[in-house]
Image (tube, rainbow, N blue to C red; front, top):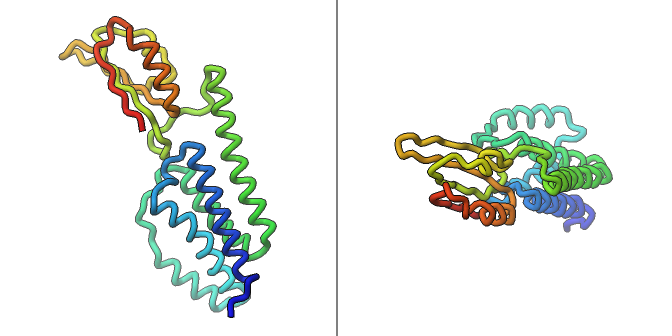
Length: 208
């Protein structure tokens, strides 16, 4: 017969993992949406919890478990520092739950609050026309892109905070501007402002 009290930590871990995943998605961390990441979010804390409970108080079993786990190799590349930290956070969540539930709840709350706080700061600085952090293409953030072809230099594009790259194609006598946006609304608004600029020949938008 399964003791209900033994299931409570598992339920806590599942709910905590779900909340962290949803908070990351809200913060535009697209990598957290995938099937493999979702399964990892739910299973990693539970596996860590079970391991910690199993080896607690048994030195011989602890040493054997360390030897067994040392064989495991992760082949999936970690794309960003945040992804690595979240994995460590989930592992710590499992360990903390096995020791004291209060610590795991505090960890989850702090994790969610930090993610939301940074998201809020980013939005606040954007409203002031500034940037709290740079957009990175390799950290799992979903981007909406504009690729603009112009026959001449366009000052509005050159000085834009959304500009990521500019290519001067001398062979075809055109300038290619590549801009990236975190918010679809920013892309649409910016596109309306510059689409009537005379040097611009073509605009290609990639909205996710």
